Length: 405
Ligand SMILES: [Zn+2]
Image (cartoon, rainbow, N blue to C red; front, side, top):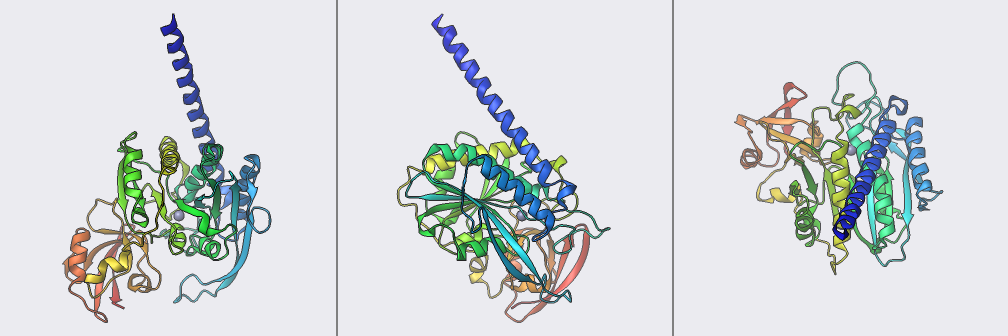
């Protein structure tokens, strides 16, 4: 009899958490459905439709009773002159950038920041990899997925009382981390109280092997062990990278000596095209990542002295070379060539017009099969040298002349 009762309790408990999971997944589907709908026209920074996305996030914050931590309610707003590309003839224009910031105060000495950018590239005027007719870039993976995980984490994290939590939906990420850079210069909480920052950018495409990337693992001596311990219960195929500098908003916090992690389910060919749509989002996968982060944060609490470490970022990794392109290689990519995950501003690749998503196939006469070949190739050049880089951009193969600077 007793056994049966225990069994029944266990079963009903299981169904309860099963239901909770279903509810959260349905919520995530609703979030992404709205944020990546045509109605929001690709959420271009400063646009009316981006405002609708901000409103959606604000409604969530209100419902979840977050404290307003913007400068005007939940909003932190500023104007910024923007020129898409220093060589382009398009005139710079002034845009309004609005971060959406909410806080739960658990009266703890330490605060954890959870962030995700909610802007995208609109009709692809800047930053698109697509060359067809004008079309809405819905950005379901980039980054409705990250916003949704952040919103759903509010319910999981705030009641645990382990930290205070600051939730920031950044704008202007696609235009060069504008929103997060502004926030770290004009923070609405005391940044010295921040234990660490977690960034979700493109987390909607968990693959069948449950493989995803965690970047920024070198930014604290504590991350590696903490991630491995958390993963004991999950057994995900995690690909770690050390650098605190990457092509998303966590970089801004890293520059303020805050340990960061960036969760990322990898590049794909729909990246920055109108095909980054909801039909390819893995909602169960989003739930798994959210659950993982929730556990990781719980486990982090027992760590004393959560230190910050500077990481060897890309330009430094290459200090043994005379030159660098200034790119972030994509470590999840296992095709031929070296896929670019991010282009560091004002470095050689950036100035020469290489883009995030390009696959480098050749440098000069040397075939670049993988990252090691790439490093080997770099060894052959010195500052001021010129060469051709053969790249594959969305199936189109062409050469770009570069000068190492
Ligand atoms: Zn993004």
